[in-house]
Image: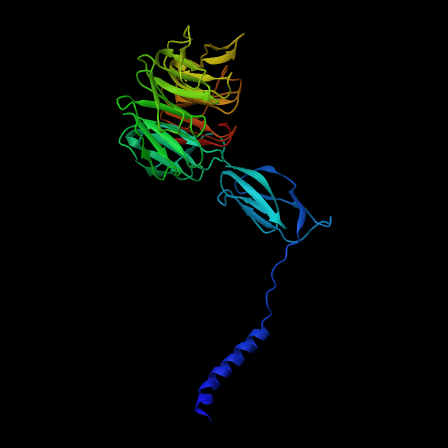
Length: 413
């Protein structure tokens, strides 16, 4: 045999064998999705309890006007909240909000799914911190949250508070936190500290502050660019360029503890001695509310609308606004002198919560009439509560001393 042919014989045999194997295996045909004229979910919003399942359906019509019953692509924006099978069966996994998406044939539709925890009332969340916590903030979906406190600690969660990660980006006590998106946020604290993050709190940058000698107590942003900070010595700092520059004003010697605007123009700031300051020009100038509605220290304020605002403070004071003949005016109120109230949050003009201390345990109060009346809830906290934040009428978090974090997905009831 020709030596060259002898060397090629095994290779030729292998090629024949491979060719035979290829013939024996049926090729997999690609899935062809019929072009669709329309695709619509039967339900565009739903609420589930963790562990519950729900079958979603979609109506599809092809370009010829005939119902399409073939395969569709089902997906979720957050598998930590819901999972979905190939036929649209949704399983609630963890608390939060997620989008359910169905797609195919060049069309798509979405539904918003809220998942609540099964437990009622205020439940304990483990923070793995012993520092006093002063403020808390969550994004709209209720999955990503941040809490700040003494020793420069920042706690971060991505699962509605089931677990919290710890960072310490400052040596100063941190008093206020506010986020303008799921990625961008602000923290303020003692020693003129202003921290800024663009990665959801994974890292922080300390900005140059015009008030290094003052303690900053609260921060609020109305937009990505427009925000306000208040602190000791009647300090108000305003930025209109995303923190690049700050306008600094000192309005008397009292400490201002809280600030909030309705939109970008109208805001209130409250502080010690019952002082209430107002602005109608984005914080460029401020006026003092006279006569004062209380002499007690005001610790926090929430302004859900231009007309509606509620403040809370020492000895249970809860002054609130009302629409007067030609302006918005303040009227005194009290939830009970036993309470030392530290923080407040309203989800609309009527429903809100206040937190604090009743002399023996942490306090949570609820109002359903815009702050006129308050009922006590079981906080399950032996420590003073200092900050509270709700993302909707049911889901909220309260934080306080010794690393305390309490959470409700039932409005606290």
